[in-house]
Image (cartoon, rainbow, N blue to C red; front, side, top):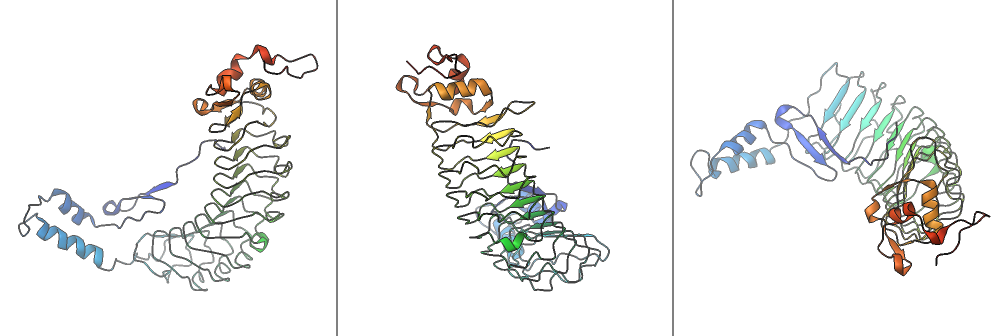
Length: 384
């Protein structure tokens, strides 16, 4: 089930008791053995070192831990999962058992991967390489692991991907490329990914979405393009995404959208457009989206509003805060008729006309206005 609330991008791992770690994206915490932490916690430092419990003992111990090589992550011959978060790890471990189903090397110092790094792991289904130092990938890296379902490359330094990287990844379902340096989307990446359900290319340097680039992704349910450098969305950019339910375009530089932008995605349920530079919405822009339940248009430059057809069941969750709304008859009547659930209603204020400036849009729309009574032909009388 999809929900309208955005999830936090911070994670905590249940490491061994002496290495409990809570990590926020972009932050590394070096694990310190428990006996050192205990000594540091219970010691009683004094102004001058040299005595038990003082800085003279604790500081050298701490420096020793920080400067000494970390213990390699142990390999277990019959394990199906391998997890390592050692900050000093610089190379992909060898000797993993062929029964391995999942590998997680996150928050390490791995900067390169050999072309045969995954050779001998025919059953591998999950590969998590987030928060490393990867700046390139061998084209044949994934060829030995055709059973791969999940690939997470979040927060590396990848400016591009090899064209044939995924040519044997037909079972891939989750692909996360967030927080890299990708400047362009290549159609070749997606040619063999008909089973992909989740694609996250947010927080890169993408300036455009080429038409038809996602057409092979016929099973995609979630697409995240947030926090890139998109200034427009070409007609056909979402072609082929008939199963898409969640689209995130937050934090780009979008100034306009084509009238048929969302025609290829009629199953869409969540649409995030907040934090862009939209000044107007084309008539009928959201008309194909009869299943939409969450629409976020906050913090754009909109004065007039377009809404999708009213969905069955709960009302549309709508955030239109932080826009300079013109609180005139068309806007007020539209909101009263559609009756959406306004999120951040107190931050949804009128910028004009002068006699309504600073008033809450939701309050005005619910109260009605004698100057906006519909005529017999369904049109509205103008404001007085």
